[in-house]
Length: 281
Image (cartoon, rainbow, N blue to C red; front, side, top):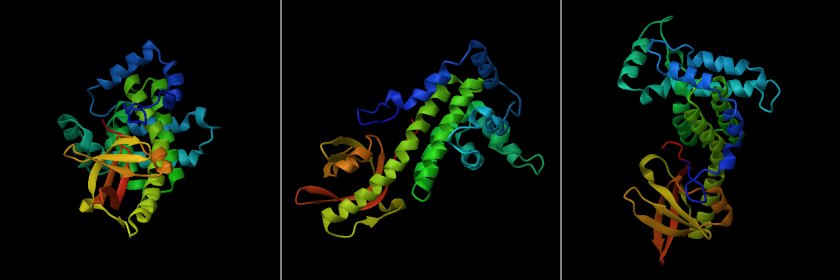
């Protein structure tokens, strides 16, 4: 499950859209998924590439609020992520198959999305969301990030409707994508506000840090405009005073990369590297 203010559980209402899709699942669709998942052929039928193409053509989305070009851009980003990073999440046998096709010359050269089937999509959503959080959210327009997550949620629900993925896996992926649509912009707002408030608190320049310049903490507790962090050794640090606005943006379980100092018995932030929602188990 995903973290939230109320103790590490994603609110059920965040996944209300998935309930509609779940009601459309039939025994035949589930059987089809299981057959697809156990297929032993070298190239899945359909492939992820073919599945994304069919998703874009579905008339269900012809009149909704998200434009066709936005949906195509978001899926191209997802496709590129699979091509360059998908191999990191394969079993040894799948990896051997993947690499054998990647080493071929065109037209026989194939990437992750041209080899594997749609059952792989839900499994790849959490790492893709982590990629968005860490690599794109700090530099991309927040509307684009939010729309991309919403489109991934749509895709996962569509997979359920079409019987192309195991319902429980696609449902979980859809919930994580729905959370990301609001969490990633919130994390950026919290980061900017925290940097500004920390400078007022310490009365000195609070550095923007990167890479190994800051320590990795987990947000362990949020209470009464105070923040507690847990380091990688499991030790809790805090409280750190924060504003009410910042508290409403944060979630227990998120990662915070920062540098801390204790002055006069109070913990203060003197360096900030990032605030990252966590989408993988």
